[in-house]
Length: 412
Ligand code: SAJ
Image 1 (spheres, rainbow, N blue to C red):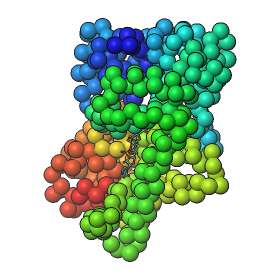
Image 2 (cartoon, helix red, strand yellow; image 1 turned 135 degrees about the vertical axis):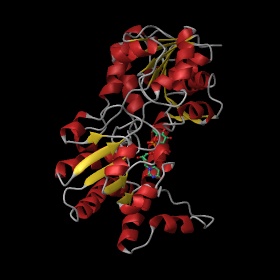
Image 3 (cartoon, rainbow, N blue to C red; image 1 turned 45 degrees about the horizontal axis):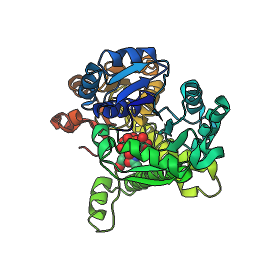
Image 4 (cartoon, protein in one colour; image 1 turned 30 degrees about the vertical axis):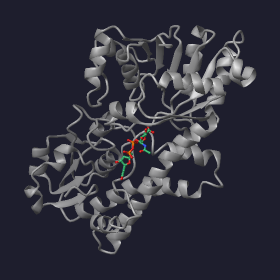
């Protein structure tokens, strides 16, 4: 095996599963994270995020010594960077985490190393990362100047795993590998082949960056279509779920599901990277973002109108996560809806979220109470289904007959 020691920078929703899977192939993996608490948790064989079966894999590789976490980078043969790429004010990409990761690993880089950027990035980010590395290490050569013979190989290989199915998709999905040179791509393929069963397809870094943004924008645009249909259907007094089911009977139609909005750190963010690069051309992509971002306000207005019919109703909001069966509340439309409903002070707002033990401070401040499903259903006048968690899909729904129900996920 050509890679004996690999370092993963950023031990979050992508980095930790990647580190664990690489380690499970018998490679020594050093995970690096700026959060000492996460590092401590992982070194104890535990995990700080919710992802099915990840705890078992992490416990296994930590106990065999194949995975260890630290806050300070150390030399390795390959570095896989999986840090956040949020957007700044004005929806332009914030590359500061990538820059910080590059600066952190630069001192330990050695001739022959491979550096891979896995974080979803705007077109040109891998070239920028290589430039930051080169600036920090003038004693080494990099592909942008030295081409095929560079001391350090650099590639972009965007992560494409679906939260909730990360362990399966990490291994099964095809990977797009965009090196800054042919030699960079080939070296990256060698690394991914150690744990990926899918195909590793070589392209250049810019195309790999755009491929990832395209995948998520495709989904965003299609969800926006479904969300637009749901609002049209409300107005025309049509059940949107039935409508979509019928239209999807056509052999070439496959409409996605409407919802309370689009959340998470990926689909609600990545399309903006394309819009930021090509504002005049990316018209549909921008409109899809605006449509999906407007959906939570639409839900809030509907619920507020219904609340007007009661004297201080109990409003039970089912789900806070950004989608089903995960604990991730980042950029969640459900959180936004619950917070704004509570701030409107139109009733008592209960939140039910079986995947967390506490709710964000801003919700506590707004007066939201985290309750069990049973209590919420017993006390509620209005029920708002915001996430299609398994517990809600399987719950006895007879109690709902007497309530005003807003089912944004079509589970009822
Ligand atoms: N959603 C809908 N209707 C749908 C599908 C999703 O409203 O029909 C909502 C979800 O509820 C959620 C949001 O969209 O709020 C995003 O969920 P998702 O399941 O579509 O995607 P993510 O963000 O969990 O993961 C996506 C995936 N990308 C694609 O499917 C093209 C995943 O493969 C990527 O690796 C991930 O983004 C990422 O990290 O970029």
